[in-house]
Amino acid sequence: MDIEVLEMAERKGKFILKNSSPAMANALRRTMLSDIPKMAIDKVEFHLGPIMVDDKEYESVTPLFDEIIAHRLGMVPVPTDYELFTFQDECVCGGEGCPSCTIMYSLNKIGPCTVLSGDMVPLGNPDLKVKDENIPIVELTDGQAVLIYATAVMGTAKKHVKWQAAFGVGYKYLPMITIDPKKADDPDVLNVIDLCPRHVFAEKKGKLTVENSYACSLCNTCKNATNGAVSVKGDDTNFLFTFETDGSLTAKQVLDKAVEILSEEAKELAQQVESL
Ligand SMILES: [Zn+2]
Image (cartoon, rainbow, N blue to C red; front, side, top):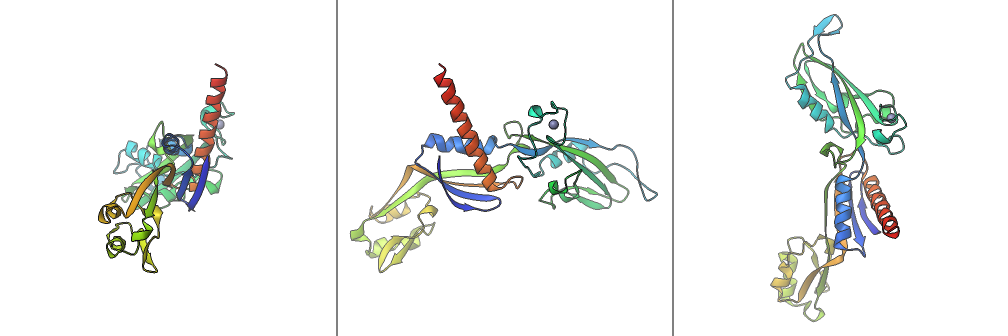
């Protein structure tokens, strides 16, 4: 798989999939959306009954149902390290839960306050503290408290969206824009600089030039306005991808993992075909 990276930030990426096919581009998109493993909170235990803090008794109640709090905790992006963790059912512990397949967090707060994702304290490795610390979970009034133990395990978005690492994964055919050189200095043709909604064109030495072809959305405004002096076509062998992550993995980790998964699947298919 031939990939040219255009932009790779912590949580955002842009790249070109080269010399490929629409089927492969879609396979890559779907793999990024639903097959990338990540950690997410899957089990939440609530302490019931009074909670004593400094001789004051707090009630373990909140304005939200426990189910809603559990769901909100599930959606908090949990840092994922493939070196440290594996799927629980493939773990050496046999699925019982151990430091190689689970992360335990405790959440211990008394009101009045807003409980935030940053209040989740990882038991053990402090590097596993969540990166987005300002996601509100629940608001407590005076006399209310929560004492929660939450367990994160690895999963994929095939089972639940809380295990989805990549978001807004989209691609388009790479725009190919050609300008008729004989008409490039025509005032009507130069007019497309202002007409183009994506600001793809510029003027150089009195002639129309393509400044930023990747921004083109193939809307054909330029083609229609210039009677074909400018033509635009989508290249169905090269694809411009953009995507974001939720922060549990970096954009580079998501792309690397997606390519790894697709290569493994291709190898497996080839083996099966060979054995027929
Ligand atoms: Zn384990």
